[in-house]
Length: 507
Ligand code: G4P
Image (cartoon, rainbow, N blue to C red; front, top):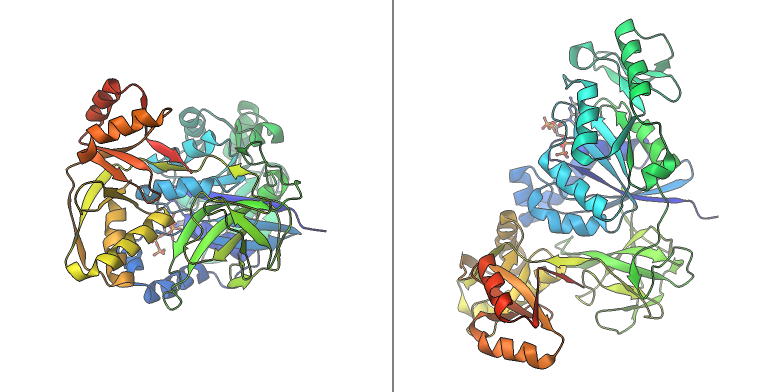
C-alpha cells in the first residue's frame, strides 16, 4: 500500500524561524540526525556556489528546495519557499504545488508584511493553513492579542489547539488543549525533552485557557480544509516545543493531494494517467555538473522510472531515466513516485516552468502565471565577443523563471525584467560566476511591460507595426509592449481597444 502524502510549504516573514522549524521537523521526522544539519548543509552548498554568496551576505534564502521525510506511515513533502519578498514570483509558483501550508509567526511580532502577502497567495488558491506561533520561550505579545490579530488581519476564524504557559522568563511549557498534557522545559537549556504532565495550571493560566476555549471557534476539519479556519499551535522551534504536535496536525488534518486545476478539466489524483507540472527549474545546482533540474509536482498516476512523458512546451516525448527524489539527507534516484510527490527531472533546457508533463499529452495544468516585471534594465556587455554566452545565460535564467528577458524589435540592447531589486544582483553574480560573462545594467527607457494579443491577427499586426520602437519578444517569442509608465499602458490601451494588454501571462 502506498503511504498517504502531505505536500506542504512553510510561509513566514524572514526571521520568524522557518529555517529552525524546518530543521526540527526533519529532525523529529527522523530525516536528519543532528540539529544544525540544515544550516550546515546550506553552508556547504554555499561554499561551492559563488552566486549563493548573496544568500550568505544577506542572510536570506534565495533558492527553494524540496525535502521529504516519513513519519508514522505518512510521507511528508516539504517545499521550501524563499522568504525574501523579491522572490515572491518564485514563491507563488511553489505554492501552486502544495496542498497545504504552515504559517510561522513570531510571537513578539505577530502578522508581518511578508506573512500577509504569502497568506493572500494561499487564499487565492484555497490552500488551507495551520498556524505556528513561534518563539514562546521568549517575551512575546499577549496570546489573545495575537489570536485576534490573526483573525482580524487575515479574516479567518482561529482555533487555539495549544496554549503557552507564560512566555520569556516565565515560560513554563505548552499545554495541548486536546490531550490536556503540558510539555515542560528541562535542564539549563530549558528545552523540551519529552517530559509532559497534566498538573493543574496556576489560576491565571487556567482562566485564560477557559476563556480561550469559550471565546474562539471550535476546531472543524472541513472548515480548515476549506480555508475558513486556521488551527493555531504555540511553540518554540528553537527549544523543540510544539514541533511534534505540528507534525501530528499535518498528519491528522492536512489534506492529501487535491485535484489540480487543468484544461479541459481538473485532474484528480486517482486518475490513472501520469500527469504533473513543472513549478520550478533550477540550473547549476551542482556547478560541477552544470545540471538543470525541473521540479515537477506529480498530480495523478503512478510514476515509474524510465517512463515517457510529453511536455506541453515542446510536444516531444522524453524518457525520464533518472528522476530524483529529495530525501533530506541526499538526492536519491526515484523508482516510483505518487501523486503529491515532487520529482526532479535532469534536463538540458527542454523543460520549462509551467510545462505540463503527461503520458497522453491531453491535459494542461493552468494557473502558473508569469508576472509583468516591475523593474526593467538594459544589459550592457563589457566584452562584446561574449554575445552568444550572454544570450544563453539570459535564456537560461528566463527559463528558470528567475528573470524575464525581452529582445527589442529594434536595436540590440537586450532588456531584462525582474519583480524585485535583489534578482538583479543575483543575475549579475550568476552571469559572472556561472557563465563567465562580465556585464552591467543600465536604466532602460521603459518602466513596465505588457503581453499583447488580439482576437484578429490583423489588429495585433497593426498595433505592433505602429509601435515598433516599443515592441519586444519574450523568451518564447510572444509579443511584448514596453511602456514608459503604467499611465502610458492605459493611454495606449484606450487607443487600441481591440488589443489586450496583460500583466500576467499564463503558461
Ligand atoms: P527564518 O528562516 O524564518 O529567517 O528564521 P530562522 O530559523 O533563521 O530564525 C531566525 C532567528 O530566530 C535565529 O536567530 C533563530 O535561532 C531564532 N529562533 C528561531 N526559532 C526560535 C525560537 O523558537 N525561540 C527563540 N528564542 N529563537 C528562535 P539568529 O540569532 O538570527 O540566528 P542564529 O545565529 O541563532 O542562527
